Image (cartoon, rainbow, N blue to C red; front, top):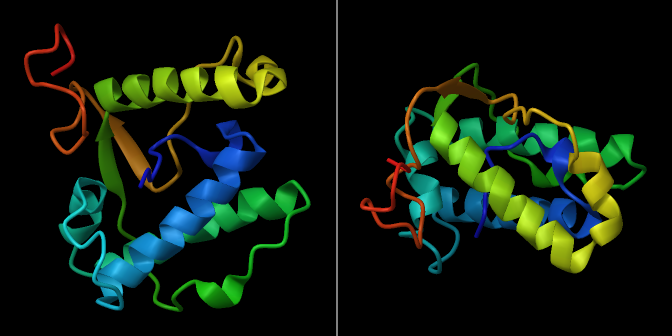
Length: 150
């Protein structure tokens, strides 16, 4: 599961569809409607909110808007009706880590999309406010000792 902190406009078509599916799965997990992925570290930042399902619904609304702007049809009915004005934080190190992770993925699966990622100072998903810091502690596959990341 990857719930990108990056704005969904940077995702290639496969990445955007995958984010939508994984976001819906995350919503089901937070609602207690599934047994899998209940302890997934990507959900920590949503679980830390007073209304985690509402915050995730806001996240999904932005993903859906991006999909619509590209001509895709992602059903709004699948998003919880709950609303939230909460904003989450993401560290600059996490955003940079995700940017490089995305570039590597796109290079393999959709090289033509790389031109969309050139000369860009990546923005976060609108739900997030960037703060100083390294890679987030919930990020899998990164050791706290990785040079300069935390």
